[in-house]
Length: 292
Image (cartoon, rainbow, N blue to C red; front, side, top):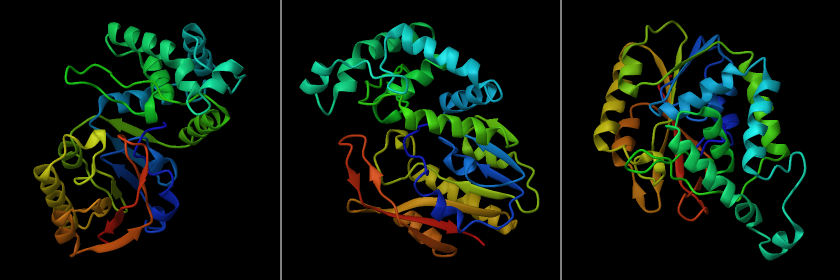
């Protein structure tokens, strides 16, 4: 999915702390889906409050088994607007590459990106293939909307290349093997509505209270407390959970989470964080907390 904040680089370490057998993997904050794609289970209940994230997952899953139709539709938009496509060939002129050796993709794709973004907004922001192209060519592969709810991410210095194509092929291949149910609810409603079964595992990667990512803006002390209370209730019902979180970041401490986690099992995770504002790597302390 190429979604900022995903756990792709950490999943090998995280899953070493998961049970050997999982009936259903349940994720209230599925995001780009890196965890569910790399964990074996009998079934998957996957949720995110962001309707655009779930809409994109559903669109991609609709193409499983018909991938050639996906590429026909995707390349049509790429070619229609004139984006670069180094997976086929690199159309960026040599003089542009020399003038902007580190940012020539952004320079080349800027006009195409802005035109597609305008057309996407004018069309009511529900053309999922247009949004997917914007995600591929947008800054840091983010989904960002202004206060009016309009998509407002700038172009990124990125391209549809061999690595991008291979990752997308992996998505189609993996999703063909999984029994997945997508939902678009507030995490409290989603977790409340589940009829839990033996050996279910709830994995949670909520917005982090003390970092500055775009998707953290609606998260605060109250939502953090609500989540931790829900987990305590699940623990009392012997429902297994594992939650990722950040305890320290740039001089800030999540005392609320630290105090709560003391009653469970904490596993330090080797991690880094890419800031939206300066695109640099920030070292911080991430943990995985489990109740088993």
